[in-house]
Image (cartoon, rainbow, N blue to C red; front, top):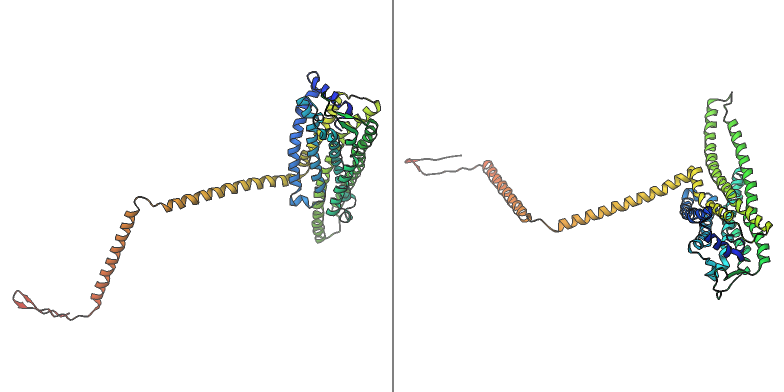
Length: 415
């Protein structure tokens, strides 16, 4: 929960605003680290959703859990923006300006944190089946069971935290800052708040610790066994060695892909445990010591760790999974190719329009070109006619008798 004790949340936030100049850690975290974490986290989680929604990734059931994890992290970052960052920038609590946010600011924080935690838990459960029960995984881990699981723990979380809005009272008539949104059921808040923190943080932490320990142990044992099997055996024929090599390579390729995804998700689970653990410890420390106003530095640092965890998953995916990096490159390559195709089509359309306009408006010398063409055709026809007449005269037998006087003599010609 962002404001650990609601009846003193205004005092806490106002003291943070007034002491930012003296406490550099609080100032840097709220004014620089948290805003950067929100911006980077939203962009990174959106890219993660695009990658896991690709055809090569969505065929794994675990991709559904990673998409839900990315969505819940985005919503948790947005909640932190309204609960911590904006109130510090504007010098006033948003819960004092809105009755809705007064009742639901802590509810949303608990809900999205629980969705993130249990998404990581069921990611580890799916990896446990892949590593320990690979032949039973197809029977228990299907897309249908995955969707049912997501709907189930989302519904349970929504109902489990429905107590929070009822413990608060909003009084719009009060003019003082921090006096409009007040806690009216302190005992209910303390009891159910403790149960909610255990449900949201402690239970996922325990499950993640057990499951990831078992997964790492199994991967280590499997790797040691595969090394022993790859050793050459004496007495086997060349054909048997070739078949064994091909089969071993196929199995090794499949195991490498599965192990790649497993390492990626183990890194996500470890980051979740490490970065959410400080907030858990500090919350219980406050409840044990019965502190009404939290320490500014410790509260801000633990909250910063929580929100940094929401923005680091994209970088963990990119650093630990070659499959994720390949799909991410394909997304950018497709976008670049689509941009290039769009530009090419635009250029082709422009060229076509230019050519059409050029052909529809003839040049100034077009009439002279047409006249010369007609004259050339006429000359060709005349030349052809003369050739035909000459050839006819040569091939025709004529008897011509010409009579006439030539120098006073009668001359006759016979051809």
